[in-house]
Structures are given as structure tokens and as C-alpha cells.
Length: 468
Image (cartoon, rainbow, N blue to C red; front, side):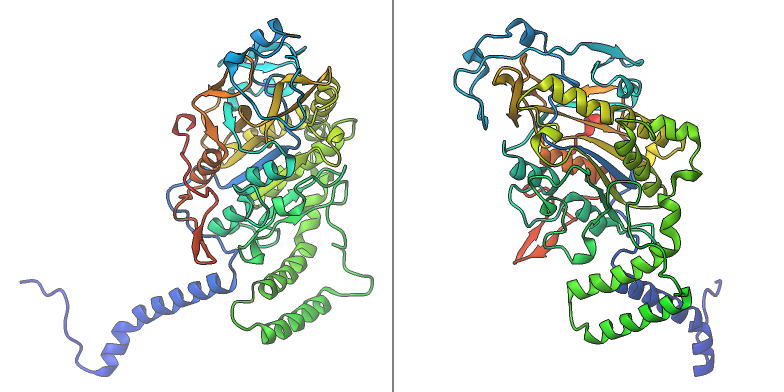
């Protein structure tokens, strides 16, 4: 009989033979300590993931499905008539009882091998048709901007809950130790109705909050060291601040822990981030691709390019916002759908298409889930004579990359674009699918708050497996 082991004869042999085991215990302890002291350290997903990061191209205000990805020939035929009773009731914010149906002036064509229908509003995005999965049957619960924005980002219609960006970073950490894990790139025209709570960490620890960059050519201020200050001096100062903060750190002080982490991150960004924001090392071909250096695409083009550079460096969630300030400077076409959408598309169509092209040619689209959409769609009836009101009963969201099968349409609205009638997709289903592609299970990604295990999807969402 073969001897598989032998009994140790004395204490010295026992310690010698066990040394490797003790080493592994020590290593495991060190790794646990790293996770304990750095909550942003990379974490294993719950199941194999297709995507490592998300770029959410948020079109604020509610782009119209009928003018973008959901052609409705019958709507044009019924232009100027009252909505037939057969289409059911709808709750709007501003539509009057005597409102008439409003046809669209946009024309749709089929593009790519898939023959995906895209309107002439998006000639550049249409060139990426075979990368797009168009969900025409999205549904939400609110028709007021702030509440709808909260639901889009947090799954709830009131503020105070964590955004999907914060949930993703809570679940996965980040692969970059010199850049924020979750970045919002707001539109320079101003804040939105939902304000900062729509992007925020809610009741999750403060370390999972987003970092909002500034618009323009200098997204982050004060990255340079003050004149006369050496890097070693700055390192020493921050070390002292950290030691003093840790003396005060008692128990689970989320705010102070986040402040300590922010000081560390700020120092690392002074060392490495300037290169991220310096576009001079991009080729002229790339700058031209995004429309940088020309109007009206320069601003959004810069932010889309920055989004690519950030995920390239391991940032987990990036949200470049198209539209800000008042309704007129968002995709919020109450007064004139033509003027509004032509203007907003002229700013964003080329940069969005460039981002998809750039990610794909760099091999990043497979690992980056791109989400394009707003908090709701628009009404088939006219508001006034040329505008459209908010509509949460049926609208469009577009996905690309991150394991999503492109060149397909999923779901449908009725013949006038009022409500989803085929394979409806609630926002919680969209959230569930985003988490699934990142390897996160909606039930396992939870946080105990006020005695309840909270999660992004609230009740329960469905993974839209047909898109994968």
C-alpha cells in the first residue's frame, strides 16, 4: 500500500511542514484586509460576465420614438385627427382633451445587413445599425421629468435611492486605482430636474458616489501641483491627513471613509489623470471622427471620446449626458418636435456613432455595454400644434456591445406609437439585463437598509434573454 502521508515526529517538523499553509492563511488575510480597507477593489461577479463596464448615453428630456427608431406610417395617415378610442386611454402632463394626432416629417430607411430601420435624424448612428439592439417596447411609470429620471437611474420614483452606477461599483469595484469608478459627464447647459440625487449613491456607503466632471476642455480643475510644491511634500501632507482622519475613524463612518478615499484618489489623479484629459495624443482622424473642433459636435464629441478613454483605463460606469438646463435645451420637445430634435441630433448623432466605431475597432465594444435612451418617450398627439408631450407607456431604448446581439428589434408599440403592445420591457427589466451582462445577479446584489434587503430592481426584473 502506497504511503500518502507520514505523521510528523516533533514540533519542528510540524512547523516546517505547515509553513506553506500558514503562508496561504497570511496571504488570504492580507487580501481580506485589502478588500476591507479598499471597498473599490475589483470584485468577482456572481456569474461569468460579458461586459466589464457601462457607458450610458443619457438623452435627457425624452427623445421621441416616432422620430428616431420606431416608424409609424398610420400616424401620418391619421395626422390632424383625434386619437381613436380603440387605442385606449393615456395619462399625459400637458396634452389637452381636444389634442390631435401629429404625424412625423422624418423618413425611415433600412440600414446594414440587418435592415434595421433608423430615421434620417441619425445618419451616422444608422451606419452602426448591425451593432444596435433596438427595444421599441420600453415602459415606465411616471410622466414628470424628476420622478421619471429617478426611476430610470435608481429604479424608484423618489430620490434617496442608489443609482445603477453606484450599484454596479458596489457590486464590482473598479479596475482603476487612479480614476473614479463612476463618472458623470453633465451637459454644460445646466442641471436637470432630478438634480444630483438621480446619479447619487443614496443609502450605499459614500465611497460609491459618482464623480461629476466639468464640461469643456478642462473636466477637472487643480490637477497641477501648486507652484513651489514638490510631489514628495504633497505625499507627506496627504499621509499626515490620512493618519489624522484614521484616528477619528470609529466604526462604520461612511462619510469619513469616503473622504479618506477621495484624498487618495485626488493625489493619484494628479499623477496620472492629466494624460486622460489631454486629447492632443489622439490622431486627427479620431478627433474628426467624433466631430471635435467643429460646431455643433465639439462638446458632446469631447465627452464621448473621454468616455472611451475612461473605460479603456478601467472606469466601471460612465454617463455622458446629452441635454441640460431647461426643456428647450434637452430632448424635451413640447413646442416644436422638428426644431428640437434636429438641433439635439445634430449635436449627438456623430459623437455617438463615433464612440461605437471607436470602441469596436479597439476591441472594447465586446466588453463595454453601451446604453442609449431617455427617461420616457413622446406622445403621438400634438402639444400645441408642433410639439409632443411626455409618454411613458411605450418608448425606445437602444443597446450595443457587452454581449448584446446587434442588428435586431425587440418589442413593439401600437400603430401610432402610444403604448407597448408586444414584449413590454419595464425599466426594471432593463436594469436586470444590464446587471446580468456585468455578471451581477439582481437578487444577490443587495444592501441591508432600515431592516430591508434593498436592490436596484425593487421587486423583480426579467433578463431580456432574446437580446443576448
